[in-house]
Length: 620
Image 1 (cartoon, rainbow, N blue to C red):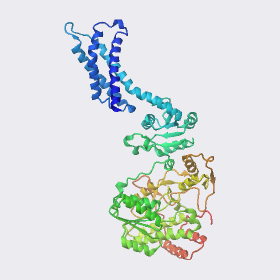
Image 2: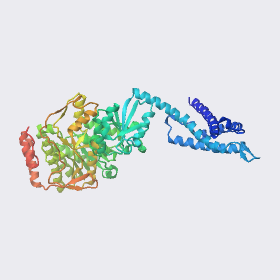
Image 3: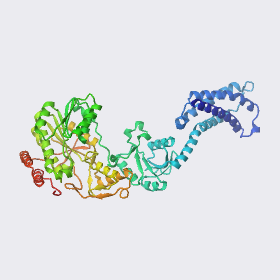
Image 4: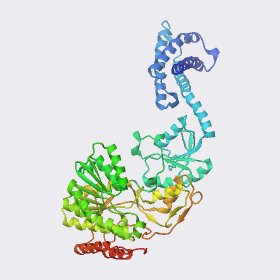
């Protein structure tokens, strides 16, 4: 098949040379056949065989018979022009040798003939090469217009151009590009690969209706998260399927490719750029060290373990009470890092003797404390368990770390610890107070890391919404005005790891999380991402704020201020003065009360005496 194609192109080239030579001579004489005088009409036949041979040889050297003409571009056009220019030079030389009258010292072929011939040969060669592609594209566009999905491309830059070009050139993608959107007023009204740029993002809903668009491709890899979120929100409200080309740093050679298109993810709707921490530059403090992670099977804990394993810890110790999670992360790490010295232990942070034996046996140098009860409504109905696990689990782990001479201890905290209205947040605030208190009396550097809701973590709102959508709805939102700060698991872990590197002892690290997200809008966007229309296909119902919930979370208490760090998106909350002796005595009283299994009201009262900013929203 390949040989036949080359023979076919060779035959076309021979015809092109003959046609260019004959028509070139006629054009020289204004297409007047009678004006073509001897000896021109006879000498052209002398020149023509040599020209054909030269043309085939030059085209062969320029590999014009090996190109896949389905994908010809400007580079192929340049090769054709250079090749034909060389052929014309060779023709002049051959003409001088074959068709030169030494008596009259004149050429038998007009000099202008060679220039006309060169132009015509370029034109005919381009027609034979590009014509195939043109006819093929016309047929393909006609076919795609009949059977393909109507597509809108947002972004008339290089990435958009590449996406449109690849779709049009594909035999397997049946998509009809109807229009292009771009915010540049200078581009509006122009054409990209033959497709009109019809307006800016404001006209997206109108153009979707006008062209009956079924799919929107957002091809703006240079856009930041805030801009991307705004565009995606507009696109999703049209009910079309939306796909996104990844950020520029994810694209090799900064060119858009169809295989890089992905569905819209929840992270795209946060309206901010992801927090990027150069872990390679800061993770030297864990390389070659013995590191222990409590709650290592949970969402945050397991990601911590992955990052630690990747950066060459001497030994990684995972402690978790839930065997299924522990087993899962154990098998994952063993497969990915077979050389890793991994120890997985089933243990409760509430067991003093078990913790003591673990720290004495394995002598960890760095500890990440991620073990905690985090589910707000469940802890509201079982406040005693929240106190036992969060407060005294942390206290016992802190004491074990202090006794074992651990160098660094990093506590995973939450924005719910700020002016808490629920028992979970209040217990995490006590954990922060424990860390800051023991930092002053221990050689261990104790720090805390405070951040908001984690997308995709166990118990977060996103998996719940997705499950409700899969079941056909309704999606339940507690209140139309509730807002939350969100971050991805990778962002949370990056912050925790950087905190360990920056830690000097006693700090509460706080992430600048950008603008909070309205939960109602998040639910609506998730429904659209799933291909449904909110309130029509999937209903949204308001269930009311649950016990302990508030409309918005805070990252700082009124008494705290912010101190900058090397990373402009990571800050340090200034410690609040604390009567440490009274605090430790209050903890003893709380511990004794928990042993007596008091009623929830008693637990809340004792917790409130320790955390003055704790204001329970409701009683259960």
